[in-house]
Length: 298
Image (cartoon, rainbow, N blue to C red; front, side):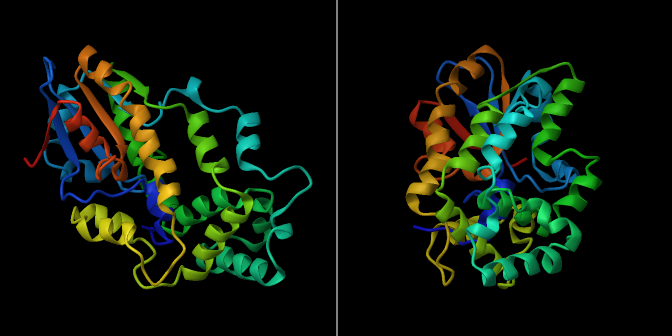
């Protein structure tokens, strides 16, 4: 199976479930108190929190909040790490990977579709194609405006910020270093170029821009799940092996820590919603581990 291209935005949106609920209650298997897991969209507006049934109650009941990574400033990658993961080798720029025509299309996409100042476009040409694609997908999806309305906090970060305000513990299921390494180094430069140019060449496809977050708001997610996993007329999404690397492998790694965290304190887990469904999704893995997993509908 393959995902359609413009799910690059949804990947950082991180992403969407096949169920029509976003919040799930986890109980049983020796737990004294229930924990919860929430599927998020990175580019959602924080005001949407009050539209998710039962979420405020889950936030109150939880004694700790764990995201994919921790909001703790000490967990931030160093500038050296960021350069190592995101930048092309010294002396190499993206125009050495793309043809003249591809560079023309990329530049036009950045200035016309993403509304970037033409004087600043060259600043990004030493960035690897895949992290550049992720950045552009967010920028073209109106993420800057959403972040401004959220006072500089992403939808995901809000929950850990609120936990800190209430004096609760926060943490991450993986390090930010490992996450940056995964997204920046998982693909060959040739493959990164393919994903970047596929986004550039298909951004005007009907329903591409903004569709992820709008579907997230509607909580009618079956259609987007089908689109993410079925072949379509745009044959440039992730392969099943790539999807395994980006999602399932991480889900399995998280499950090594999730049970002990829930046993210690009732926890609210906040992860990209695409991590929840499917045979290797966190909901399925929790059920297989003996927990009762129930959608919170009110």
